[in-house]
Length: 106
Image 1 (cartoon, rainbow, N blue to C red):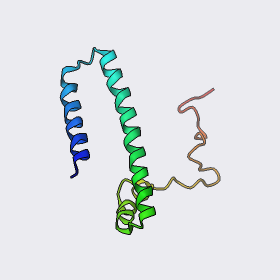
Image 2: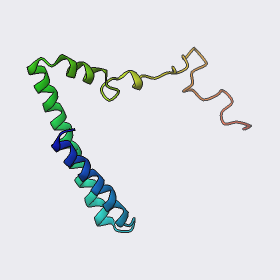
Image 3: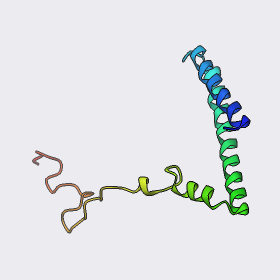
Image 4: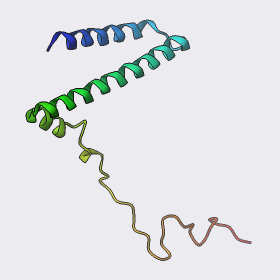
């Protein structure tokens, strides 16, 4: 790893350590940490996108192939594996049964 990534890793380790001292009742401490992490996350995503753009400009096909094949950037794992039942006349999953409400007699 390079020096920048080493610094990021040590910063993340320090944040993990600091969470041990924050109690669940300390809402300002928790809220500040969550908000700060959201900002850092956005900055890291922006940096990653910038690096991908630089890889495109440089023609770094191996880097781009790694990004394309990454689990984080593919949608294949997000596709549904089951399908909803097909609605047929009189058998729609969104219709109430004909005897609605159950066991009700006028």
